[in-house]
Image 1 (cartoon, rainbow, N blue to C red):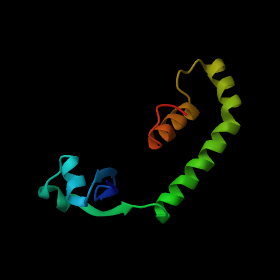
Image 2: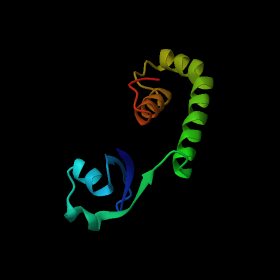
Image 3: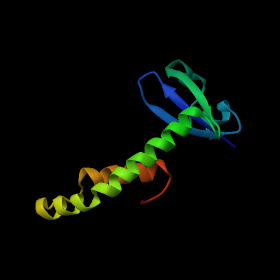
Length: 102
C-alpha cells in the first residue's frame, strides 16, 4: 500500500492510502467528481524531500517543546488553563506521528 498527499485547491492537504491514487481517493470516499477540486497529489516515498523536511520540523519542534515543558507546567498552575499552547502543540505533533501522546 502506498501513501499519497492530496493537495486541494481550497488549501487543505489530506493523507490517503491505496495501491494507486485512484484507490486511495476511493478509500476516502472521493469519486471522479472530486477531481476538479484537487490541485495536485504526490506519492510519499522514503527519502521524499517533503517527507524529510516534515520529519526534521517535527524533531525540531519536539526539542523546543522539551525545553519549554517546565515553563508550560508553571503557566498551567498559575493560570489554571486546562490546555496550554504547548499542550495543544504536543497533541498535534503526536497526531501527525500517528500516536495518541508524545
